[in-house]
Image (cartoon, rainbow, N blue to C red; front, side, top):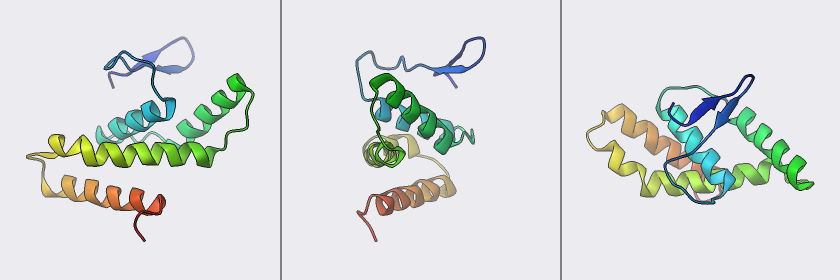
Length: 114
């Protein structure tokens, strides 16, 4: 994956596709989508938990994992609806079906669909 650098001990996630100050959960959402689309079975729960712990440590806040997940799912749904269709052109039916099912699941988690 082109967005992962390694230091001596841990992976360091870097997003150099856009140079701007952005939303951390938005970057995490896109990173996880790209990882899963590339066939990497990285644990979303672990990434989100570590991100949340880091945010809480740095900001001395008590942000919940669930609130971060909600932001990530909102961004994920927007990305799937706005940006992914272009990349699905010409894909096999099973890939498109998987994306469609993921959109429905994400919309359900957000309370948009039953």
